[in-house]
Amino acid sequence: MEPLAQAPTRLAASPLAEGLRGDAWLYPLVETVHILGFVLLVGAVLVFDLRVLGFGAALPLRALARHTLPWSLASLLLVVPSGLLLFATQAPDLLANRAFLLKLGLLATAGLNALAFHLGPWRTAPDSGPAPLRARLQAGVSILLWIAVIACGRLLAYV
Image (spheres, one colour):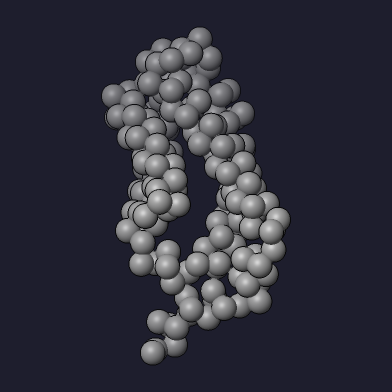
Protein backbone atom coordinates (compact mmCIF):
# COMPACT_ATOMS: atom_id res chain seq x y z
CA MET A 1 0.00 0.00 0.00
CA GLU A 2 1.03 3.58 -0.58
CA PRO A 3 1.81 5.57 2.58
CA LEU A 4 -1.26 7.80 2.17
CA ALA A 5 -3.53 4.79 1.64
CA GLN A 6 -2.15 3.26 4.85
CA ALA A 7 -2.85 6.38 6.91
CA PRO A 8 -6.41 5.41 7.99
CA THR A 9 -5.26 1.96 9.08
CA ARG A 10 -2.30 3.41 10.99
CA LEU A 11 -4.59 5.97 12.60
CA ALA A 12 -7.05 3.28 13.76
CA ALA A 13 -4.14 1.25 15.14
CA SER A 14 -2.66 4.21 17.03
CA PRO A 15 -2.47 4.06 20.84
CA LEU A 16 -4.96 6.92 21.04
CA ALA A 17 -7.57 5.12 18.90
CA GLU A 18 -6.99 1.84 20.70
CA GLY A 19 -7.34 3.61 24.04
CA LEU A 20 -10.64 5.15 22.99
CA ARG A 21 -11.97 1.80 21.78
CA GLY A 22 -10.68 -0.08 24.82
CA ASP A 23 -12.03 2.13 27.58
CA ALA A 24 -15.63 1.60 28.62
CA TRP A 25 -16.11 5.30 29.44
CA LEU A 26 -13.79 7.25 27.19
CA TYR A 27 -15.47 6.64 23.81
CA PRO A 28 -18.97 7.45 25.17
CA LEU A 29 -17.55 10.58 26.83
CA VAL A 30 -16.01 11.79 23.56
CA GLU A 31 -19.24 10.95 21.73
CA THR A 32 -21.22 12.95 24.30
CA VAL A 33 -18.91 15.95 23.85
CA HIS A 34 -19.39 15.64 20.07
CA ILE A 35 -23.18 15.59 20.43
CA LEU A 36 -23.16 18.50 22.89
CA GLY A 37 -21.05 20.51 20.45
CA PHE A 38 -23.40 19.65 17.62
CA VAL A 39 -26.42 20.69 19.69
CA LEU A 40 -24.80 24.08 20.31
CA LEU A 41 -23.81 24.50 16.66
CA VAL A 42 -27.04 23.41 15.04
CA GLY A 43 -29.19 25.08 17.70
CA ALA A 44 -27.53 28.44 17.14
CA VAL A 45 -27.68 28.05 13.36
CA LEU A 46 -31.35 27.03 13.39
CA VAL A 47 -32.40 29.93 15.62
CA PHE A 48 -30.64 32.36 13.30
CA ASP A 49 -31.91 30.71 10.10
CA LEU A 50 -35.49 30.70 11.40
CA ARG A 51 -35.20 34.43 12.11
CA VAL A 52 -33.93 35.01 8.55
CA LEU A 53 -36.95 33.06 7.31
CA GLY A 54 -39.20 35.50 9.18
CA PHE A 55 -39.91 33.74 12.48
CA GLY A 56 -39.37 35.95 15.50
CA ALA A 57 -39.32 39.02 13.27
CA ALA A 58 -39.43 41.28 16.35
CA LEU A 59 -35.82 40.26 17.09
CA PRO A 60 -33.28 42.51 15.38
CA LEU A 61 -31.31 40.31 13.01
CA ARG A 62 -27.87 41.74 13.79
CA ALA A 63 -28.40 41.53 17.56
CA LEU A 64 -29.42 37.90 17.20
CA ALA A 65 -26.32 37.26 15.08
CA ARG A 66 -24.13 38.78 17.81
CA HIS A 67 -25.56 36.19 20.21
CA THR A 68 -25.70 33.09 18.00
CA LEU A 69 -22.52 33.37 15.91
CA PRO A 70 -20.13 33.17 18.89
CA TRP A 71 -21.96 30.06 20.13
CA SER A 72 -21.75 28.36 16.76
CA LEU A 73 -18.06 29.21 16.41
CA ALA A 74 -17.27 28.12 19.99
CA SER A 75 -19.08 24.85 19.42
CA LEU A 76 -16.47 23.99 16.80
CA LEU A 77 -13.98 23.70 19.68
CA LEU A 78 -16.03 20.72 20.84
CA VAL A 79 -17.19 19.27 17.52
CA VAL A 80 -13.96 19.19 15.53
CA PRO A 81 -11.57 17.60 18.06
CA SER A 82 -14.17 15.10 19.29
CA GLY A 83 -15.13 14.24 15.71
CA LEU A 84 -11.51 13.63 14.81
CA LEU A 85 -11.11 11.38 17.85
CA LEU A 86 -14.23 9.41 16.94
CA PHE A 87 -13.01 9.13 13.35
CA ALA A 88 -9.63 7.84 14.50
CA THR A 89 -11.22 4.82 16.17
CA GLN A 90 -12.68 3.50 12.89
CA ALA A 91 -10.99 5.44 10.11
CA PRO A 92 -10.86 2.69 7.45
CA ASP A 93 -14.46 1.63 8.05
CA LEU A 94 -15.77 5.19 8.04
CA LEU A 95 -13.97 6.05 4.82
CA ALA A 96 -15.74 3.10 3.21
CA ASN A 97 -19.14 4.14 4.61
CA ARG A 98 -21.39 6.06 2.20
CA ALA A 99 -23.30 7.73 5.04
CA PHE A 100 -20.03 9.08 6.47
CA LEU A 101 -18.84 10.33 3.09
CA LEU A 102 -22.22 11.95 2.47
CA LYS A 103 -22.03 13.55 5.94
CA LEU A 104 -18.63 15.05 5.07
CA GLY A 105 -19.97 16.37 1.77
CA LEU A 106 -23.00 17.86 3.48
CA LEU A 107 -20.81 19.48 6.14
CA ALA A 108 -18.67 21.06 3.44
CA THR A 109 -21.76 22.24 1.59
CA ALA A 110 -23.26 23.70 4.79
CA GLY A 111 -19.99 25.55 5.44
CA LEU A 112 -19.88 26.91 1.90
CA ASN A 113 -23.53 27.95 2.17
CA ALA A 114 -22.78 29.84 5.40
CA LEU A 115 -19.75 31.49 3.82
CA ALA A 116 -21.76 32.52 0.75
CA PHE A 117 -24.48 33.89 3.04
CA HIS A 118 -22.06 35.99 5.08
CA LEU A 119 -20.25 37.27 1.98
CA GLY A 120 -23.48 37.92 0.09
CA PRO A 121 -26.99 38.57 1.36
CA TRP A 122 -25.92 39.13 4.98
CA ARG A 123 -24.17 42.34 3.97
CA THR A 124 -27.43 43.89 2.76
CA ALA A 125 -29.98 42.16 5.00
CA PRO A 126 -32.11 44.63 6.94
CA ASP A 127 -32.00 44.46 10.72
CA SER A 128 -35.79 44.29 10.86
CA GLY A 129 -38.46 43.24 8.45
CA PRO A 130 -38.16 40.48 5.89
CA ALA A 131 -34.76 39.34 4.70
CA PRO A 132 -34.00 39.35 0.96
CA LEU A 133 -35.20 36.34 -1.01
CA ARG A 134 -31.65 35.00 -1.51
CA ALA A 135 -31.02 35.16 2.25
CA ARG A 136 -34.26 33.30 2.95
CA LEU A 137 -33.41 30.66 0.35
CA GLN A 138 -29.97 30.14 1.87
CA ALA A 139 -31.45 29.93 5.37
CA GLY A 140 -33.87 27.25 4.18
CA VAL A 141 -31.05 25.34 2.49
CA SER A 142 -29.00 25.66 5.68
CA ILE A 143 -31.75 24.08 7.77
CA LEU A 144 -32.15 21.21 5.31
CA LEU A 145 -28.39 20.64 5.17
CA TRP A 146 -28.01 20.47 8.95
CA ILE A 147 -30.95 18.08 9.25
CA ALA A 148 -29.29 15.89 6.61
CA VAL A 149 -25.94 16.04 8.44
CA ILE A 150 -27.63 14.88 11.65
CA ALA A 151 -29.44 12.10 9.79
CA CYS A 152 -26.20 10.88 8.23
CA GLY A 153 -24.50 10.95 11.63
CA ARG A 154 -27.24 8.76 13.07
CA LEU A 155 -27.11 6.43 10.06
CA LEU A 156 -23.48 5.65 10.89
CA ALA A 157 -24.68 3.41 13.68
CA TYR A 158 -26.89 1.40 11.33
CA VAL A 159 -25.12 1.10 7.97
